[in-house]
Length: 158
Image 1 (spheres, rainbow, N blue to C red):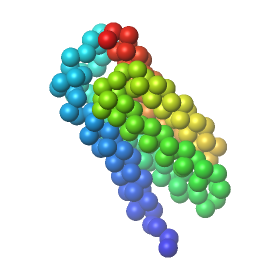
Image 2: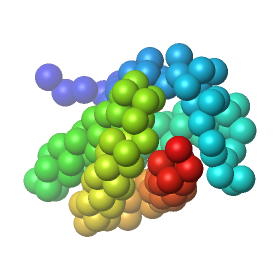
Image 3: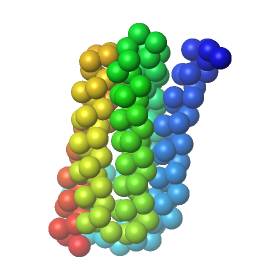
């Protein structure tokens, strides 16, 4: 059965948003309690900024994944690229579990470093198939780079 383009597009975005929702199950309860009590660096953004940034990033990730999915009939490497994408998506949710769920900045830092490399690997695989799909992940890796620095400072300060 062939899936229509609009359904693929919607599924790709919803899968990414689902990863964000899963992460939020661990994040949201910890923000007003544990996270609020942490010593944070001066460059820590306000809490309200995280939800719109992550939502935007998940939508961009979904569009990127859709673009690769659409090329899967022409590029055999698309399936491998999408599997790697899925791994980084799982690592994305795991970071929330490690940092916020377990309330452990050290485990969170280890997780976010793994996530960063998975994003980079995804981008490299996507680039071979669609440069535009890879470029759509640039804001994501930049934000995760910033989040890694933030996670590191929280680890050091606490």
